Image (cartoon, helix red, strand yellow):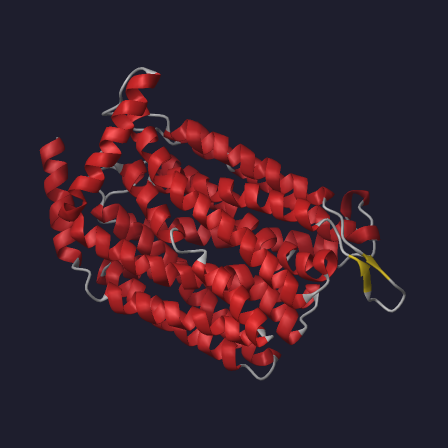
Length: 441
C-alpha cells in the first residue's frame, strides 16, 4: 500500500484541529472556570462536571456502533464527520456566552452562574467531538500501510498535542496574561477566559478543512437507497454481534480498553479540577502545567509511535498503562504542587502512546470494509463504562469530602485494564485480519 503523503498530513491535521477542545475546554480552562466562577464550590462543581461527562459517555457508547455501521454501508463517513465537526464547533462557541456568578468584595460567591447552560453546551460539544473521532479514526486503515500504521497514528497524536500546545500558548499570551487581551476582549465577567472557547471553535473550523479536501473515502461495499442503507446497516451490526467471537483478540483489547481508557478519561477530565480544588493552582499555573503536559505527551506519542512498529502495539500499551498508574498514584499521595508537576508530566509522556498504540493496534485488527463500524465499537469501548470513572470520582469526592479519594479509582482502572490486556494475542489478531483482507480481495 503506497502512502499518500498529502492524505496522511491532512488526516493528522484533524488531530491538530480538534485537540484544543479537550485541552482548553474539557481539561485546563473551562472546567476549572466552571468549578470556581460558575458553581463556586469545589465539591459540588466536581459532582456536576462528572455528570456532564457521564451523559456524554453514555450517549457516545449508544450512538457510535450504530452510526458507524450506517457510515460503512452508506459510504457517508465524511458526511458524518462534517456534521459532528460542525456541531462540536457550534457547541464550543456557545460556551462563550455562559456567564459566571456574582461575587462580593471579599471574593465570596453570592450568586452562582449559568450552570445549566454550561452543562448543556459542554455535553453537546463533547458528544459531537467524540462522535467525530469515530469517523476520523476509521480513515486510518485507508491511509496507512500495516507496517507504518503505528507511527502514522503516532504522528496524528503528536500533531494533536502540538495543536493543543499552540492553542494553549495563544490563550495564555493572547487572553489570560495581557492587561488588554486581544480583539478588544475585556476582563469583566471573565470575558477573557470565556473567549478561549471562541479561540477553540475557530481553530477547530480552520484546521479541520484539509481532511475534507484531501482524504478520500473508500466507498466499496456501499448500498444505494436510504431504506436499503438502514436495513443493511442494522443487518451488518447484528451480524457483527453474531460473528464477534471470531474477533476474540479485538474483544479482549476492547475489554481492556474499557478500563484503562476510563482511567485516562478521568485524568483528562479532572486534572485541571484536581489541581485547582486540592492544590489551589491559579489559572496561569494550570495553563503552564498544561503546556508542559502537552509537550511531554507530544514527544511521547511521536517517539513511541516508532516503538509501536518495532515492539508491537500491545507492549507499547502495557508500558504506557504502567506509567499512567504510577502517575495517578503520585498525584493521589502528592503533598504539594511540585509532586503534581511530576505526576502531570509523567502522565503526559505515557498518555499519547497509550491512545496512539490503542488506535493503531485496533486498525491492524479491523476486518476490511467495516472500519467505521469497528471503530464505532472502539469508541463504544472507550465510552461504555467511561462514565464510571468521572461518576465515581464525583461520588468518592462527595463521600470523603476530598478529591484525593476520587483519584484512587483511576489507579484501580489502570491496574484492571493492564491485567486484561496481558491476555491479548497480537499475532492471532494480525493473522485473522490478514485472512479477511485476502478473502475480500
